[in-house]
Image (cartoon, rainbow, N blue to C red; front, side, top):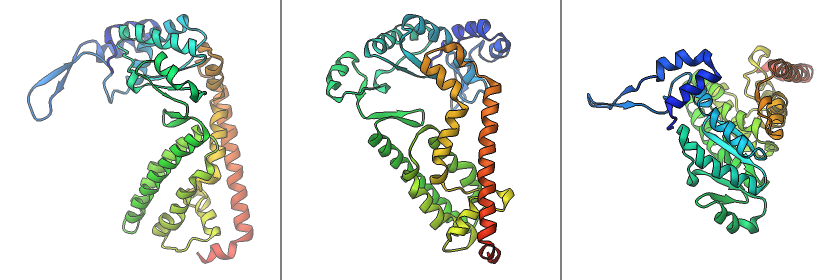
Length: 326
């Protein structure tokens, strides 16, 4: 994070004057950083400060001049940015031009590309050595690589990535289950507002992973729910009931295998405008269409509510005796 503050503030003044005064008050002069355990301090004169509410916006607007310059130099390369994570896609000649331009112009705004932390994903594994020569210092792979918490690459490599994450999350569920015996409310909050959000993000960004989430569902059913409710084993009927939202008498602990494909579908629908803009390489369309987004959100919410009502109706119609005993 070596953003040139002077250049960034100048860009903010032109591109987003509404934030200029506020950001100038924060970043206009160097701030003192106290060294832990001492009375000494160092001055922070570059970059966006971690924890600042406007750090993301400041950084994004601050490097807009670099983004526009790269687009002018290599319009054929399809590019996306998320804070300081940039990605370019296209023919090798265009990606090479974009990478060279990024290294040339990035330092002027405090953006320093690091080849050893950069990955080039190619389609033809027989050309690995060629691309290693073309992009010196850059990691080159034909399998794929992690990107913004998801994975871009072949199906086998994607499955390996997801399986690794699932193993980590199963261990988290086991830890929470042990706590649930003595602190059920605390454990439920940690699950519902914490680790469940991790695979929710993965489901929304990675397609066709529902079968890979079966270990999570197994751990939920065999460990977490018995620890929370004192009921063991958990029948199919109770598992369905516990997956309902609290307002419908459940716990909101859904089966990730059931919703994975829907979450991905809804994510694509809500972000269709952004996806189209990236694919078409049209930065003008990156301005969000709030009306279209809200409409898509309402459609997704309505579909989820209908599925919830159908599930509740089936449970009450077919399994009222068992649920009544519980």
